Length: 566
Ligand code: UDP
Image 1: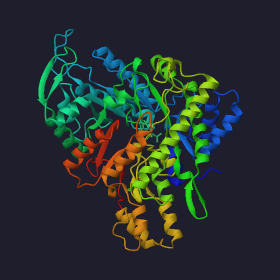
Image 2 (image 1 turned 180 degrees about the vertical axis):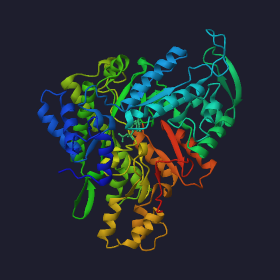
Image 3 (image 1 turned 90 degrees about the vertical axis):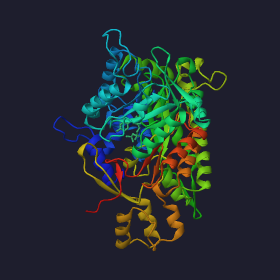
Image 4 (image 1 turned 60 degrees about the vertical axis):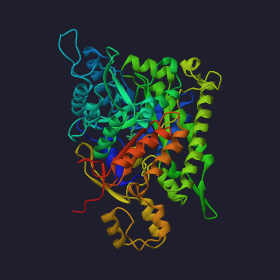
């Protein structure tokens, strides 16, 4: 028996379960998991054994792969990966051929990242037409419009990451490009930052903007001026985030294959041009055992889940349908996968450790270290059984163990799969104890109440209609006298957690994640521009690979919002 919440069932029916052409649902959730398990196990010699294991993993909601795998596995030409990076070269032909390829990826449920820095700046000379170039931001608007119309096969909104490096002449236009909430909505944008730039900010130096076509200096500007522009816009709209290119490339396992210039849309996977990556997440809220009244993590079960999940994700590379020969070639050469987690906040609550505590941060390190070690162990066992990834000889691992996968771990946002698994998003704190989730593509708005909280209140005999009403109104326990202080501490929500703890959790998980961590530092409406500046600067100091903040209410349309009781 699979236990799913009503919200989960609704999402599955709306977007995941197979339908006929009259939109009649053709399968149950159980049949969906069976379809996925069978298809992914078809990469195995002993496919029956692995189908059973994969089915068990998913139907118990202990692990779920990224959405495209659930939607498309076993379907003819089913594309199963969530993450792609495509090149944007400086010619009209290349720009539009990448646009076409990204439309195909969106249609299949995948998201695309691009670095636009090779494009010549606005107003630069164009030999073939004798005219002038429109520049990267204008082309981003075209990509955005195309994304809007493709809508990822009607199942997901198109997701893109757009990056421009900090030394591009159009960087100021880029930084300000989302100041109007209606423009470039289908993009997260990030500035590609280098350590040299950060040092120039520290020392208040001038900074050169270089024309990528001529390699000459187009303009010189105070680094601090650019920095202030970035944080001001991020405070106002949430964009741009930062992507730290030097640290990303310091950890590039395949430097001979090229420099990494971009990540996928939510930032958890830095990828080379044409690489794709498929993700999956372990549901940490299912890992607590209570013995003699002390809750603790079931490490044995976790090790087991990791081994099967890594195998699952590796199989996807073998059975996937690739939309382009370039994507197939490099994806199969590197076999990158990203196993991550969801339900971290709920695990902490079950262990009675407040998110905003050093104990939680230490546990984050210990846990992710364990996941990394066991992921690498599983990947190296797969290498023995099925062979190392073909480019292993050119990788950083030459003197080390043979691996099946060039990367193993990513912390994805788990925007939908955590709802299916009925747990908290990724490594995020609880967003609120009750909130409205705005329907995607015109779907109904759903009110969600944290079930762990309801359970806890029931056990302590504190649950009643009055409390429920107050929580629906406020979304948190801050001003509710009825609830004891230890419980309040445990159920602190995202906006009540000091930003430093948001960053410390990201840092702890990043330390043992070979790809990257997608995390949003959620800030209350009254957070200041100086707060954002400090957060962005600390993110660099902490050697994070990227940073995103979001100040409550700074977009007209946001996916999670406090309940509207009217
Ligand atoms: N993604 C996308 N469109 C979406 C949501 C996600 O293309 O509407 C891609 C994007 O690359 C993102 C990745 O899927 O970084 C993982 O996102 P998430 O974990 O939220 O996906 P889920 O599997 O929960 O749907």
